[in-house]
Amino acid sequence: MKYSVVIDRDLEDLIPGFLQKRQEDINAIVTAADSKDSETIRVIGHTLKGIGGGYGFDRITELGAAIEQAGKQQEPVRARELAQELKQYLEVVEICYE
Image 1 (cartoon, rainbow, N blue to C red):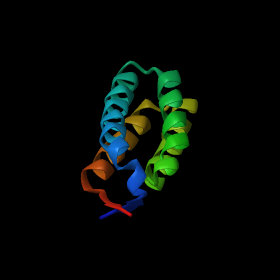
Image 2 (cartoon, rainbow, N blue to C red):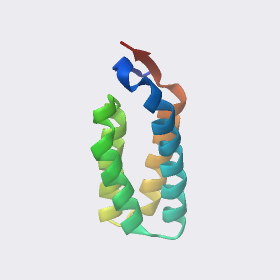
Image 3 (cartoon, helix red, strand yellow):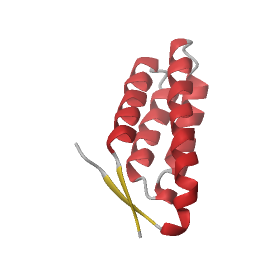
């Protein structure tokens, strides 16, 4: 599946750092899932849920909500699966600046 995101040109300088931070979030989710740290999973998911849409990445918001829920329900395997979905999304998303 291909995703396209239209982002305000004023945010262009911020996007590389934003995306790098999401890679760090993915690694942190996997680490937390390995140690069954549901609270860390929940917090990262909550953060993703809150910030994705602000930059135009609605899919990050959706996945963040699901990751937060996995943390609340103490489902580390599900959190790991969602982290993989986030990773795949970031690999294919096309960013257009206006």
